[in-house]
Length: 315
Image (cartoon, rainbow, N blue to C red; front, side, top):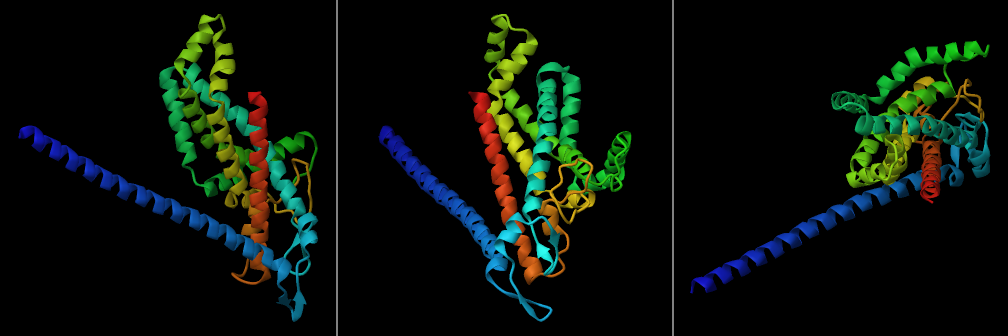
């Protein structure tokens, strides 16, 4: 009799767990559907608003006006109003700055993470890790003010060595340095997590085969952490691409381009979307969404380049 009671309790418990699992699955499915719907609706809204300047006509100073698509795509001058919206050079500037930022951020972040996990004493590693964590919590406007007050003077001094005149230090070099500071914590912390996740037997096996600690760190450990490191790079560079407040303070917002001189003023897609928007409707508002479409394409290009680099290094 007791055995039958026990069996009935087990069956009832299993049925309750099954019902709970169904409720959890339905809840998770609803959340997934809701989040996916929000993303899809956001993209549709951006596309509708971003394509409006090339389809609809706008009344400006009593005259009908429509933005020419190809002038926008390949244009080399940006001025609010009928003077022209050319975002081609801004797209190139954005990709150029992102690539320079990646060239600085990648080695600094990865080597710092490797030093924290594998090289430095434990106490010093903890201090540096906490410092990186603290840096990741600094608001972007603080970075912008620091860049405006300090980094611009560094850039100006560096330019003076080569007898090159700058706009008070505003320009590409200052933007790249500030974006490197902003993306460094993200890439570094994810690289630390990726290196910690590497199986210790890989390092021990490398040392047992006669490899030095340096060879083990660079050829075994980093190779095993490659996927996590590249994920950190993608997130860090995407943050740099999406930054507007800090960059708008230090870029100079050049009205034409592109310019590959690191001491010249520049303009990115995010600063273009942020600055000069006086109304919440009309052409001057809708054209910012057109720049947003360009920004999405820029992010896709950078992510594709990082994916190809990851594949090449893997081979």
